[in-house]
Amino acid sequence: MSNTYEASSPTPKGQRTKEKILEASLHLFSQNGFKETTVRDIANHIGIKQGALYNHFKNKDDILRDLISSLTSSAIVTLFDEEKQKGKDPKYLYREGKKLLNSIANTFRLLSFDKKNEALFKLLMQELYKSAEVRETYNEYFYQENVKKLSTLFFMMMQDEMIISGDPLLLANEFLSPLFFYQMQISLLKIDRKSTSSIVTMFDKHVDFFWDKIKIEEPQETLF
Image: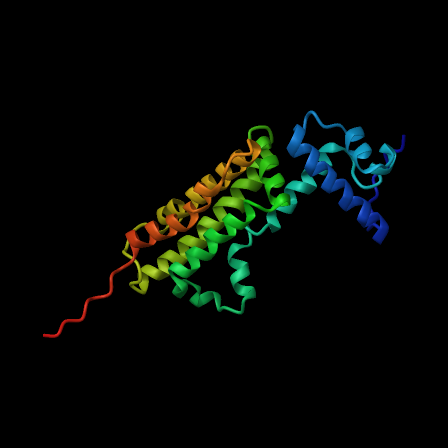
């Protein structure tokens, strides 16, 4: 059996094979668990020889590392980059106010029903307690980076007297944490083939409730 790792850039055909390996691995890891899935299982799933797999990855850990690294470019990680792509000036993104929060919540909701993201999220949850590398990726890219960016936007909203003054870091944590929880709940309900309709509506309700608590009311005009 060949165990030679291909260091050079793969050919188009090789790239397609590598993508198939990653897709099959993600499916099997998320369904059966990383530890329980063998390299032979992955190769058999896509109909290639086990030796052919080693042309692209050193071992099973290397496949997992590649999958986890893909999380750093997921839609949740690039929440605020997406707004830049829409042509909005990042300096004035805070002026979107509630509209921005709705956009963030909607991203979490849509990703809850994306098959690839669902599998990645499931794999992430399974490996968080087993791998320091996975924990580091989750903490840095999935959570802390978004908390930091959102807290900056909340601070600017406070400066512009859009929302009440307070701890912007705490506010960012308070807003994002339920979104992760709702996403996890949807995943669990889908595993048991139960209805997700009650959770789906929570994303919008969360934004409404949260914004009503922090916004500064416009002064009412009087006739006198």
